[in-house]
Length: 460
Image (cartoon, rainbow, N blue to C red; front, top):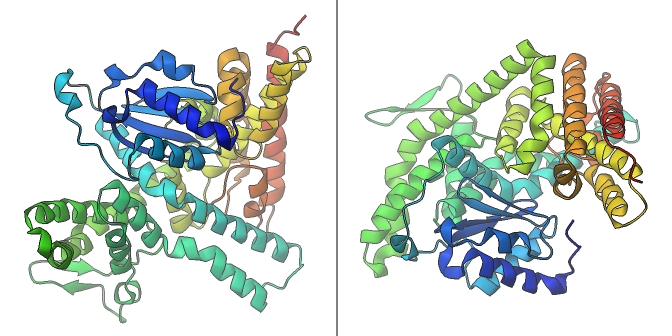
């Protein structure tokens, strides 16, 4: 179990990581998600994994799909900032080092993995605003359900605007992040989101279903709250922009590179890329809805049961699907599974702690188990569940039981939030959804606790 680090130790940890990675010259790009510093090395052959595993302050190091994922915890934004400074790398910069020429060509991640990585990198930077909006929407649901504030009051009107803003204007948020991912100026990503959100397309005149643009028609779609259409549109813009910008005289770039790129790509992404993204989003939402509706408890058990493994191996991209469900269906049935899984991990790890003698190991299990209910599962998973195995099995079993029960009871969330105890207000509705949630929460924690308690032997 890694020791907690203070802000004064970030520099030492970052220096050790940089040395183990092979220095700045072996870093293609670096970014971070909620808990992990993600480094894409030019050559994994030059990375000393044993040395990286021994870096003080890291909870775990995972090598996945060509990425070196250093699990830091919630301090990752500060660690990321220090790492950029120590490595002398600008944020969003991609290293053009020729070091790869001297080593064997390495296998690239498959298309699906690359797609998920790209999608996650376009969504993760916006999660802070999205979670904030979701929590505010949850608070509004709670105070109105309890009758503390009238639903038609001016206070609720204002709070609804605050909570809805990041979801309504999602194309701006995703456009900004996608521009960083595709190596163009962020303002172009925001402008792309603005084009998709232009009022003419959001609210076309009565009877207008599209616009004739010569050789093709541009459909009048409403892209508020969308993700996939924006990502594809910014990607298309970036391809054309990079082509033009490289060939444009430097003194003319600021005037012509962006304008020519938009003149070429705006009709194309409005006519093809964005509608394709919309089709993908609707298809994925419908597909998952069909699966969970028809497979029911089985789908819930399988999905919730494997969530600890998806966290351990760094599988990501779920947020985009969950947000799309909320936009399309008005609720989501996938995000709650991450909440149940976290509760299951908490129960399993705390049960393990009760079988341990008093000491550092037991204290670590109790503290990480308690933190997990706040939506931070990595310390418990990497520090206790994965090394000890039995708590992991118990957490997966408890999660599977909870996932199956949740599908039988039909528990959903009505807003995006971090999958922890602070999100319970987002499950409030006029029916019994909240009460059903409480039942599933109890089952998730207790079932994994009991299974873990039975599996683990008392330390003597």
